[in-house]
Length: 328
Ligand code: SAM
Ligand code: SF4
Image (cartoon, rainbow, N blue to C red):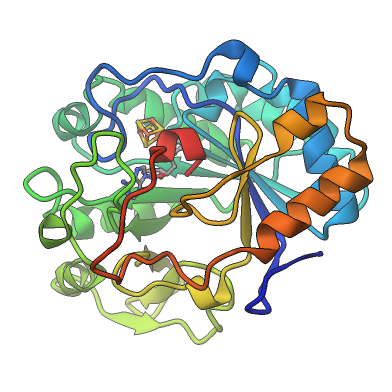
């Protein structure tokens, strides 16, 4: 298994399928000028399936989430999902996406074995959407979400990041909308992972701010269920059954219970979003190393996982790679 020196066991694998994207969310990418990984650097579909297979069959990974960049831009996505669903033991399979194009692919993804999706949407207002993402695609996302629900990729979760001056007043409205559609809404605190390194601690909307804003319209009761390794703290809205989650990676980090390991689109193992080191599995794989040795290298990488993200330390230095290249 993927054990670290603090006794944590990683069972949840995030796989970035591409660093490219069709949106330019302000908290993630600059408007232009971000260079992409070159094609030969990217893992091929076969290499991804092989590494996921090693994680599942040799290292105790039970959940695999595909992300990016925008994973729906990866041509082989449906086949990658299908091949990962055929692994034994079968891992749980999910996708984090901006939802653009999901309308067309939700059915095929479901048929291939995808269990769930998280769709990112920060606003109910198409104009605000255009300001945040720098693209006019709000309607596409709504259609993608509806298709995911219709195909039974449930529970459909919606991820929202609040940005000062853009959508920071939208928390209650987003929750009303999500509950009406039967989507489970989770707010994510803005993290220092943007390519342009523009994050400022003093400017971010905190979990405290979000909860205060939601409480102007709703009664929130902490969910009884233990949080475990799940990053979202969840509240029942007006007594239930709807819930809302807040992922407070900055102000209430959950590192002590972290169960994640990450694989970048170019085949680097990362122990944490905020890690400053990576372990190159692609090089080893292409050098002809066998599965047992690749598994061993993955284990060694995870053994070196740090206790925490370091975000609460004033000397924190943002990782070189942005979220879109690591896989959020
Ligand atoms: N493109 C897909 C999407 O947007 O869902 C998958 C990749 S994206 C990097 C994954 C998640 O990270 C999204 O929910 C997005 O909102 C979130 N995200 C991106 N940059 C972030 C940041 N600086 N702080 C917090 N969340 C961020
Ligand atoms: Fe693209 Fe997702 Fe980053 Fe937005 S958050 S720019 S959709 S990768």
